[in-house]
Every structure is written in structure tokens, then in C-alpha cells.
Image 1 (tube, one colour):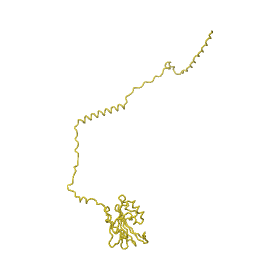
Image 2 (cartoon, one colour):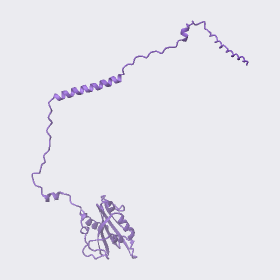
Image 3 (cartoon, helix red, strand yellow):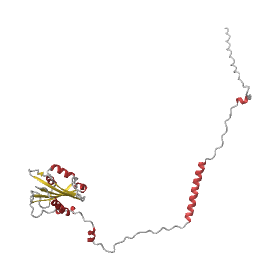
Length: 267
């Protein structure tokens, strides 16, 4: 058996030669070890102590030392006594209080807080009753008060919504002239309703006034006409109203006289 000769290994070509390095003739040549040596890093400078930390330590230490010294000094001092307390002793009047005199000094309640029928003026002598109106001071209901206005439903709602509390009235007839005096009281929180914005003001600026018609009006239940004179005043939540109905223009002096006498009973 014959053996075939082995194929020879291919020859490895030599590495290419490095290109020659160009040397600048203007600069001096460095030794070979300087070309290949690496640059060593520069060493760090030593760390300095932080001034903030030192200041904080000094502050804490100074506080502790100062507090200790202050406590030691204060502990050696004698205690300072407190000033005596100034307490006012209760005093009593030398004389006994007279209950009657004390009650007389107190402000009196308003007359309008009592019985309104006792505050109304009375019908003069020689007068006669006017229809079914009360000729003596008497209480009247909210329905009767609304009926007198001539527009019952509207007046009734108005009185209900305006804080109506109670009313009293007296009326009379004399020499074919009809008179009616009415006191209407409202609740305390509706006291402003006792003043009507349509009232004419008195000359002295008082809360009230009077007026007389220059032209006649007509009764609701007949064809007869009449002249109206009205006077108003307000005291707290109480409204005073004086009405005069006549076939001729109302004499303002008569109207003011009745209003004056009625007002004097309310103060």
C-alpha cells in the first residue's frame, strides 16, 4: 500500500512593514522610552477641615457651657419674694336701697305695650254710632280691618305679609260728619311697616302727617260722594290713623285737633 505524500502547508506571508514615521527635523528627537511611557496622574491635595462643622460644634459647646454657668450663678442667689397681690374687697352701700325708689328710676315701658283700647280717645258728647262700627274703643280683627279698606283680599294679604299683630278702633258720627280712629300694631321685626311711604310729612319733620282732599270721592256701596281727611303718626311698631269723611272739604284744624289728642295718649 502506497502512501500519498502530504500536501505542504501554505506559507504565511510576513506582516507588512510599518510605514516609516516622518520625523520633523525642527524638533529634537525624544528618547524611545519617552515616546512609550504613559503620563502619570497628578496626586490629590490633602482635605482641609470644613469650617461649617467647626462652627456648629463651637456653637453647641458654647451654649452648653454658658447655660451651665448661668444656672450655677442663679442657683447661688437668694430667692426674690413676689409682690403682694392687690385684691379689691367687695364694698356695700352704707344705706339700704329703697325698692320703690329704684323702680321709679327705671325707664317706664311704652304705653303701646298695654291695652290698645285704653289708649284710644272716646267719641265726643252728642255723637251717634256710625253704622256697625264700634262707637266705643274696641278690638277689631284683621278681616274687619281689611274690609274697611274697600279691597278686602288685597288688604288682607298685605296685612298678613307685613307682620300684623293687633288693632283697635273707635268711630262716631256727628253733624253728618263721620270720624274713625284706628291703632294698628305690627310685630317688633316689622316696625317699619307702621310708617307708610305715601304719608305727607309734618312741617317739623315728625314721623307722620295729614292731608285733605280737594276733590270728592265716591262711596263703594252708593252713588254718594265724600271728601276725605287723613292724619297719620308712628310710634315704634304702632300706627295711628285718623280719618274724617264729610260732604264738604274737611276742615284741617278739626282733623289736626283729633290727631293731636290721640297722639298725646301714646307718649
